[in-house]
Figure (tube, rainbow, N blue to C red):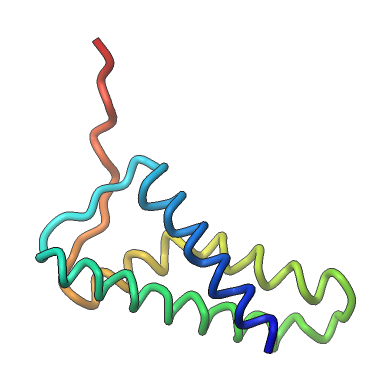
Length: 100
């Protein structure tokens, strides 16, 4: 049960780093649809983590705990496109900031 809480908390950190820190822009949809897309992305992240934990958890020990989290974090770009795309919001690379 504690694993779900850890995965839920990890999602918000990773999602904020990906969506806010990387060169990624959300295109289309209202603010409400973007919020719903973030929640769908959360559900997909938890489902991916659970599936990976069930598949890899048999390793036991530290690898059985850390590996599902690591692989779920690596899936965040795919989950973002799927979660937001389900509501018609596109996730695309930004144009980059130009410093003058």
